[in-house]
Image (tube, helix red, strand yellow):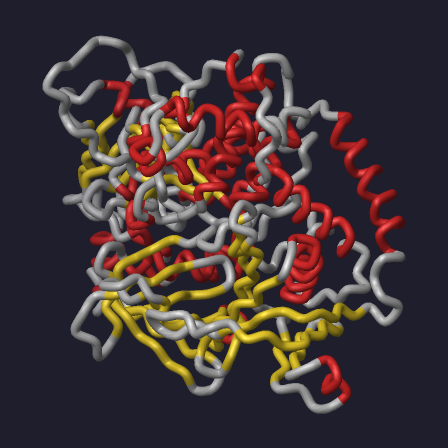
Length: 589
């Protein structure tokens, strides 16, 4: 016999392969299937089904390789190509299994989801079933371990429990790997949350579920003090929650909302009327005070003459010197804009984080009154997006800001408003204010703010709540403790939709900010678990993650860059390949 014949005979040798069948039960021994190395995966499934003698629909079943923790989803691949030998332990199991999903509204849904696809695609399937558009904005979290109570009362699962709210981002599942690969079992409980804070193309009529769940997630973030807000803002949030709770009992659906169409028409008319109020050369001019804060102190404000032209703010010592060279010019394109307002205290400040070669420069502008603040704040917001005062949205932006300020104003006390309402203040404000004030002190303040929102429809109220939430300075930040290369102490990395923020863990100060649009490349050294990023200007940073896998940071950065590629004209078809290219890393392969 020639060596060639011996080689063929060896390759075609018959051997036994152990395959467990889930339908036979956990105690049943594995089936022994006689195979050859050139038998394809589809053939193994066919032999296994025949030997099990169970007559049912097997179309959803696939083989799971226990030792390698991977699915065998290519039916045409041979055992030899897959690297499967006689010591392999395979399991024939359904790809779709029941899972308990905790929604942002704390409702627990039990549904069948795909355990074999990457989590990204599984989320797409979940959102399609729940009618949630833009599934790329959501992901799954491991639940927080619940502490055992001394007395177990059989009350049933009332899931309006704050332990269901998302905690640190270190618990996110990997979008590139399947549920089963990450240790998720049938009937396990996972949390569904919005992960990426870039909510694209919201259409109230089409996004009923999406808006409701966004509202619930933002509400819990405020009540759990995951995001800072002022006392006045908390009263507005409480009033809107109270109103939404009342209106939701009478309005059946967020979708049918003619008020939204009326509002759009009104804004268009208002836009035409207000266009005549802006100056002919589309420029804002006025006196304002200005400061640049230092590390732990604020430098005193100084008054200057300011002009706003296109996307640039210039300031001068006086109005008379505005024809000369300015003291400084600040181009706001790409900057961060946040309010620092107290209506009761007549404080109307605009906080700007302006990109610079060494990071972000922080600037505060203090306006004299709310009318000036509304116009300058609107101009700053538009400029940050590269838009000028000539943009048609300027008027509606001003109106939106004035509407928000109006909601913070207290109205004359109305005896009926103070006496005929009984509200549960503990469900409307965060623990900080529950400790600071008694319910009888909170109730009139919430009801005063309520009078400013009482006429809003359910959809308008939810959108107003989300709008104020998104305007908070710390909105959209996810925090991970990291150790920067060359440093001996841990620091906090804040991850936003357009920037990374380095924060001193001991005092909470922002040390440095880097924007994604200045990023040249980033990579992960998977062996030492270190993220390295290169920015323009030959700026390089590297860090390891303390409270999360570095894959979390890698996926956040790539995910936000993916979100920025979306546009309104795009169809709902997601470029899944691009998402995995930006977020997957070698672990996804």
